[in-house]
Length: 572
Image (cartoon, rainbow, N blue to C red):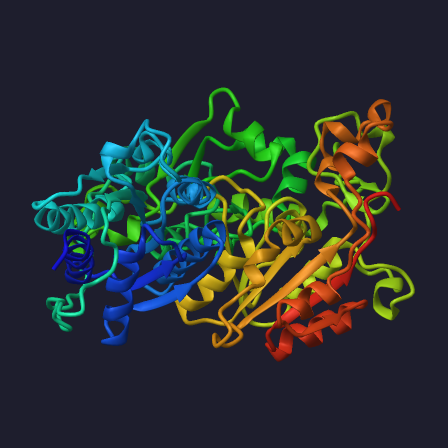
């Protein structure tokens, strides 16, 4: 057996033994030893493999599978295979999201032998193992007679490192790169044995340590005038924290993809309340923070308020051993304070009674598109759009983003929410008891790869998914619609809010009147495209939804496809 085949088989066998089950392959010649090993293991029923011709989309597909596995409670690393050269660099956006989104991703990157580096050899980077920044660890496996044994050891280590050892110890899950130097020949020999793999093992996650600050500061804080702020928790559950917050009747301010959104004491559209009721915000003595709040400047102002005690809770609290958790509660859990009901009721009443035109910096419109939590003087801003405008119901006027988001989230199920304005629209309309569970890519909150990520999430979680994103996001990741000829249509509905450009910029400083001469071309970037032909060209069913009734009906069917929702244009 040649060295390259032996190395690839040893690596794949070790990954199987470490519990890896999902691989995404992008075709290439230098990576052929890995591809053959993966293909043979797949034929034996040991791996679930998908093929994508675009390495960028392959990376995001793998990332989505990893996030879906986490949501389903079967977390394990997902591997993505690429050939050498620029193919590796195309993984970088997904690797960055995996790093900052704390997802276990294994980048298996094929390389030329080291002797070809710095020689001008085709598709050879001088040190390919350094191309991907922000990995938890990188390995550069040298071709040679000992490569197979080394690959087996490194693969097991890579799986352990990608799973991490918990947020409390500063070692959360994340991406790991295995850069493997393959020399010719790159294909198996005809005489090589057919059944080479070892035993397939399950991946059992070890309990993570409990952050000492949880007992020392978080639990005692429940006795004060406390509120909770929930950002994206990387797809992790928050049942233990959610239960405590419910028991202590803590008002909860949460982004759409926070697991705290299910709190019975959720403050709806909380950024509006923070603007309108500074008196309540000033009374908060302790703020319990879960995950990564990134959406609003109101939240950032609250976090930076002088004198406020901020307590950050590890997102993987539910993975702490049960006996350690119970010991912590027995040691430091306070009594529910008197007056808590009045405190919480004040927040919930504010959420019900504060009107959009009462607060100091209202979400306003440019051509009907809401601004994104500006700190600016609101005098130049238009009135906010209202969800109950009859024109939204009969199709006589384009929908607002909020109305469309509310309709998409109106049916039970799982919503994967895009970045930019899509998540902000949803943030304004989700109420306690909403029938959806929301996930997002908030590690770096980019717009790239969202289609592939949502498709991967559906595969990893086993759930049908509704993806809600903007037109620029879909154009940016249109290659994610491409699948193998024999691959069935995934159980994903793609709802695209088409306002013909980048509306998010209108709600930032770039939408100010004195910059208007530059806004249309350099920020709004009107493209004049609809998605009927693009969807059909990639083999996806297509429909247009012009009313909230049509959007809601489409969401309720669960039928996969691209559903275009024209909304008020950026430059309307």
